[in-house]
Length: 208
Image (cartoon, rainbow, N blue to C red; front, side, top):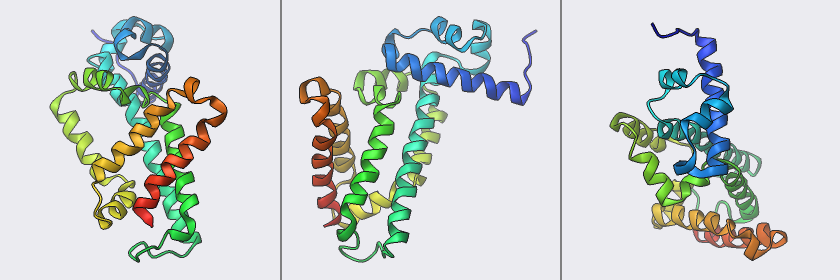
């Protein structure tokens, strides 16, 4: 008979597994990381893993979702702070023109969370496709519904108001992030300022 766990024990095990997933994805990627390595790092029996997740890909997705929420909260809180402190009415044209650098800082902060987490790994199409191919349909649908409600919608609303393509803007930020992976070419000392210049160029098209 499978062992049963209290709610508190379950939360602790999931937390350990997500931590292990984030670290192993960053170190080895989706394809090379194994369930054996995950359970060893989490300090749990292999059989216990399958009481919580059907496969490593669903765990990877779950771990990435936590950082996805953190990114969204960072953008939401940052934008709401800017609106409040500067007494901005977002519906007015050019409302953010005087605080564009603050918006850039918010987006750079979101990119930093992404870059320093397993979300960065899933920016690579092969890794993302490997994970998505193993996800149950109901989990995918739930993810899409959550995305619709995410607070980064503040940015999306501003993008739409400008008549820009939301997917193209998201793609622009993703390309900047992917470029940051070549910091050995750009030079670590130049990386942040280079990213700032690129992000500001996109932000100006949205807010100017």
